[in-house]
Length: 197
Length: 398
Image (tube, rainbow over all chains, first blue to last red; front, side, top):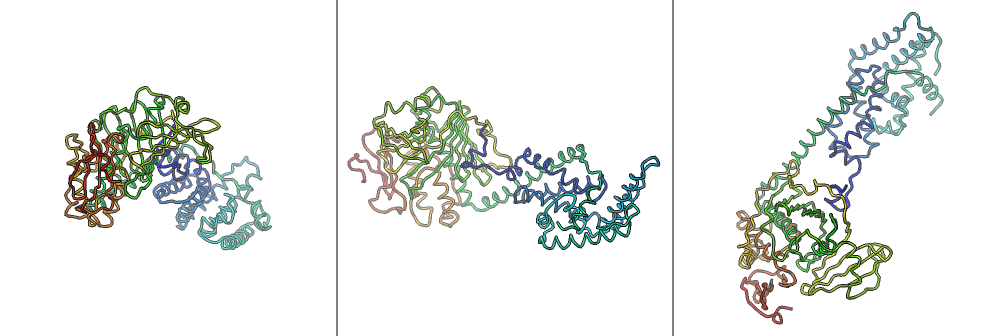
């Protein structure tokens, strides 16, 4: 079926991103393609589903408010979403009270093992709590980079685009963050044994 | 990744998260986003169009220019009805087609001889959509007799189509030759031309002369598909028409021909009042004089029909060439009727020509327009001093 886009101009065929700005169907498809990744990123940063969902909503609502001014391809759109999400999460956890609440939640989660569960499971949960706590001890910007690198599998260059820094800066920050994590985790002694990373 | 990072990655890979998306949240958010999306779209459109529209409304010159645009887009539709333009010719030949889309390229001998491209789409039983590359759209519904002009600045105008019909109009619908008949045309052609390449396709040409009109049909040598139709008028050298990108029976959405104004568009506040009694030589002469007296160059319009005039009008308004005393208060109807006078002149019979581009009003002994009224063997010639004289064909300016 020939539509206005093909007749109103001369062989004018909008690209998918342009189409998403005017076509609710295309916009919905775009949203669905990115929802999972953004939710997971928020969950990996915040360790808690409800808050992650709240931040995910905030991210997409912020996106739609500014979508008409966005000018880029879909990869840049994804990076833009990560940037919005990073800012939203950072903003959320910068408040000390919230960070404390997350930490409390993380530790409570680690001690939720029932008496009948295997010791290994207990240890695993404990170890995870240690790592999560260590991640939360990082500065929000550092935690963002670590999360994007190791959980979302973004390349250094992609992270650089998200955070608006050069790739070399990101590499340095990542290196520093890992060193901090190593110290935190080592001192906590995962599973009763010192961890060397 | 350095060994440190790799070790760390291994450690991270063992982490588990409650990170499986809950699609109830996703779907709920989707609804919220769509509502916001719709609101933002509306706001953006309003803001954009209000801005442009405010600019237009604040400047009376531009308002008039916008009115001229409406007139011109209307003319495009009128030209379709006269049966002398390329579209009507094609429809006559290929009447069986339920829908036709094509690009109409007209080269005028008026003004600077600029080439105008118009996208055309026709759908039975009488819906026509024309659109220029600049975004001027005209939608005509011959079944209801209504037409709508849309200007890219966010305005629209609804007009009455029935008052524009001319006699002898072949009309857009009804039985006619099919695309096959068009492909069979070479058998009836007067002349078989040497092959030439058009848009990378080797074509055979077939020339047919029908009175004043010479039509050349170019068919793909390999497939016999119609590639291009060219039309030339002996009485109007330089006024050529080329029809390209012709496709028949393409599925066309009804929305393309909807007379409902686009969301957010505003009525232009200018009515296209067509009055057949006013579509006279006298109105036309008065309009020529009004135009020449209303611009700082004191010259006649570069052309008297066609969408290019709208652009000229806009450009002159921007350059401040339109005299405020003339253009501040103007009734667009005389302009519309004057243009209709020309648009309705049967091209073959009237053999009208316009030669007023760049001519100053009152330039002595300078003809600017001539035509032969229906049924007359003499021509009416309008001069730059706005006098009209009658003369025979051999007395016409060369």
